[in-house]
Length: 134
Image (cartoon, rainbow, N blue to C red; front, side, top):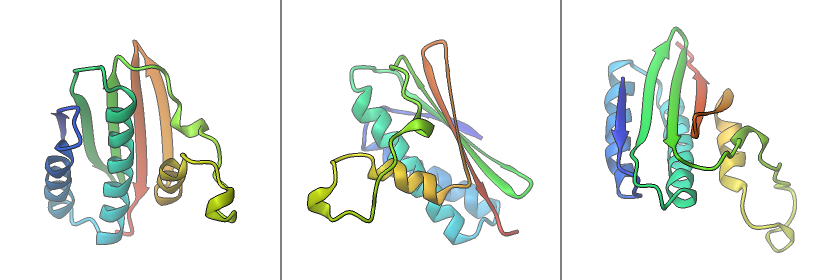
C-alpha cells in the first residue's frame, strides 16, 4: 500500500490514520505500531524541514513481508542525506554538554530493526524494517 502526502507538517495526522488502518488490518502489535509511527514522524518531519523549498509530495509505502513491517519513504529533489550515517548521539552526556540535533534519528535507529538508504535520480529513499512478534 502506498500513498503520496503533502510536504507539510499538517499531513502527519493523515499519515497516522493511514498507518493505523494498515496496522489494524494486519493485526500488528501496538508496540511495533508505535515504533513505526515514531520513526515515520521523525523522518517525514526531517524531509519537510530540510527540503522545504520542494513542492513535491512525499511518497510513503507500507507493507507486511512475513514477520516484517516494511516502510519506504521517498523524498524527491532533495540533497543527498544518508540517515544511516548520521552522527552518533552520546545520550550519557548531560543536556548542557550535548550538541543540538541528531536525537530524533538516534531514536529511529533504536526503535527499528533495520534502516536502509538509497539516493537515486535525486531521490532520497529510506526504508525501515520493524520485526513483528507474530
